Image 1 (cartoon, rainbow, N blue to C red):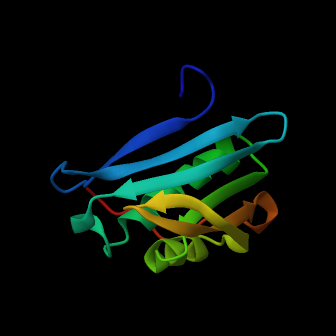
Image 2: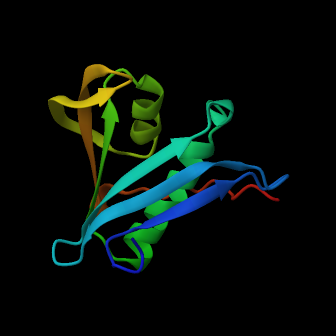
Length: 131
């Protein structure tokens, strides 16, 4: 993705011991529209520890500060309330529902579409965890 200029997927490792936890990505970069899509996927054992929020916050800071994006979009399965909470903690606004847009474990499912606009982005003042 990075070589093609369409996005980047970054590995997320736990700082304390280097264990791989998952990934966070920006895809569908559109420099003309200054937009991209955010995605993340974490190992079940990493859920509920704030790793997705921390990683996505870092990627968003890069997206808005370095890449000068105006909009970042994300989608989540309507049944994945934890993922929806991650997006909402980061300031994303739910903008709509894509009906039956994917199949998860053999079940047809809806997705929520979220958007975050540069002028609404509030980078956290929380310190970056040490090591």
